[in-house]
Length: 165
Image (cartoon, rainbow, N blue to C red; front, side, top):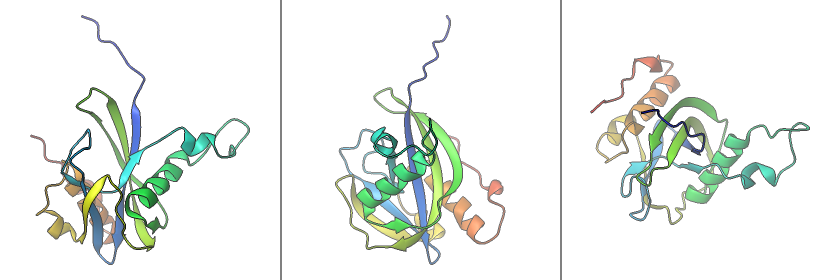
């Protein structure tokens, strides 16, 4: 049987926001399609309005569309502004409703604001990498936080392993 390739994906981005050796995590609301009631980091889906409602960067393209979307999601979900956004890694999964999702994970320093949660999250915490271990995090988030923790300490993040069930 020949497999069918699909090119339609949801593109999402996440941010591991760090401040004074701590990382912001949020608990997803029970109504979320994927990973309800799990702890994660802020982020969300790229929407076409994130770029089509702004001037093109060149005659034909919009640059920084994902970063702009991520900054919007951070403002909407937790009410914060962040500094320089740096790429960490990417991953893919299939949502329970069958939608393929590509997630681009970034890390960035807290810049300003007080945490104010929207309806997508029900709790938040600023935690160290070690404290994060005691939360029911979405698979892989703890490893991503550890990677950023190592990067910020000047250590090699490539030695972090992801648990494979």
